[in-house]
Length: 274
Image (cartoon, rainbow, N blue to C red; front, side):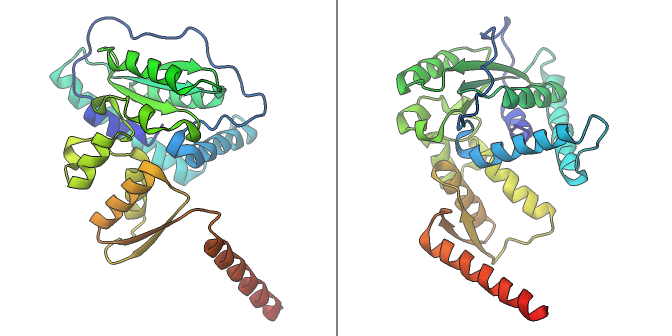
């Protein structure tokens, strides 16, 4: 969620129409121990955010967040506030609304999203569906949000196995804040980045590397664990920075062999040092 905020707000320049967006009165049920798989292309990152949040709560109410992470989150929120302030100078009544269609039990993620959004000045409406919702049920909710002029952006928190082409392309490209539709991906590949939504996760990866002082020009980049639209977006953005990219999944035999070889080398080195 934090990665989305500034990029979403820069694209939501339409004035808000009167009235309130459609809301579901109840939260999704708390998880009963099974993984909901929410987050789509952000699955691993979403799980890490949840672990970080849980770790933070275990440190106690007076414990500060890790400095680096806290600094990045504060910067994202501040940037979002500045973007929203500029938009509201032109349209004082503008109040951006992001709808999140969620299939599964993930109250903690809802709370994280809501807290970040409120601090940045963004309204969120959650549409909570059962974890076992089928393609037609998800598309039906997407189509309703597409036609709701009071909602400016739409994000999906559904199992990765549910991300079919039919579901992804049911989103209106102008509300597709994660850049998942064929239209937004196509514009990015053609070089029309200023006319489309780009995956905030992919942009955040590039931005974090550059802020760390990493020059991407001429580098060989191995993208591990990404797939679908996120993989395509990362490759495209890295190549625009002058990098040569390769992709691999975590369970690729060659990658596992390389990992085992490196572990064996490190073990031998430690034994020699003893």
